[in-house]
Image 1 (cartoon, rainbow, N blue to C red):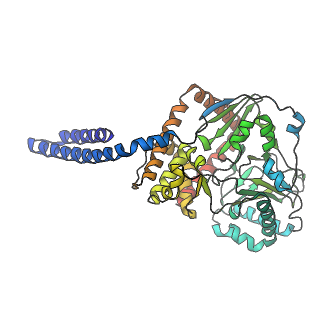
Image 2: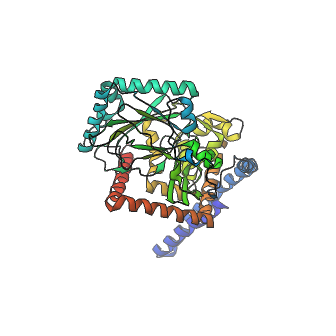
Image 3: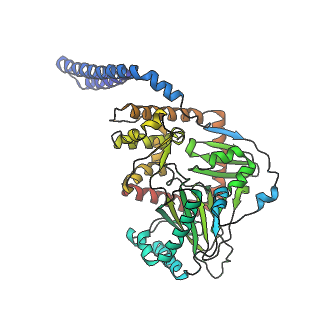
Length: 480
């Protein structure tokens, strides 16, 4: 039926063009012959496709009807204040792996206290990034920095190994870095202030493997001005134990997750934008800032974060800092994570499968059919990863993914077709949810939170933020 409708639409277009252009009966006959050819070709291919789908549709429908349940795209959560209000206001601190597992962060005091000269090397690179728009990438890559600051990286490796050994995690591959100057994240040479002034956990490190359990991030000061107190941390973190005391359900939703943002509006309204489970999230009846903790770092201290920890650069910080991340080089994607992905992420998986000629679906075959809980993902090189991530980070690309119902795929395996059918089903569900009353209420609450941020930034700050996003999009697209 779909093929017939496509054929009819195409034939009408050809027919209209032919009638307008034809000036005699002979040309009209030629046009009608073309229409007949188009109709017969599409109908024949459509019939063969319909026969194939008729054989597999019942099995596929049964599989799609029995996927792991997704949380509602939009929901409301009412909570009661935790009984221990004093604990909610306290910023606890320890440097052990167990503390990291429970709270999402740990503070290792004095880990780099003897390496002040090497910390200054990072600060010199930060200043070069700010004033040299044409600086070559390799000059500030981590492998180049490691040659000049070996003791810094040895200190990070020791902390990383201790955390991995005790927790049984595999955050072993160094893959991300960023400079911070106050609340500005300096990602690229000559880039305007990239404001990350909201509670969030990271997108890029989660998007493909969805594995923040095996991910560690290290944040440490590299320069503190003389007029700045040592007590300025530069980075706030959300304490998972505080989240759990407020709501077990909320804790379950964000723990080991990613692509999430908390947006406070006022004392009785906040939103959780949970992109890992759809374009929406949860309306909350309290101020999520109560989860925040601001460790007081000095030069030489290291703040360790698990990949799922929501964080927020300190708007009052005067010092500069560095962030370096480690991830699992061979992530395993679980069935639950795969089939609770949102529309944008689902498009990414089907696009990767298409480019790999069915290779992703083949690797996930047992996961797709429910005979395995997880499977190792194919390794993508750096340029390919950027290719798939760019649409998600670009407002335009994200919008295209969000409204794109179907994909073109040359793969014919049953697993690839199941991935495609699941992606289409997911996108339709999300579009429907946006137009529900709870969806509209969420959008309004989120708009209030966004306008609050704009007001706090000021006009110039908002312009800088837009410029930074456009610059990042431009560089990502240039590297594809």
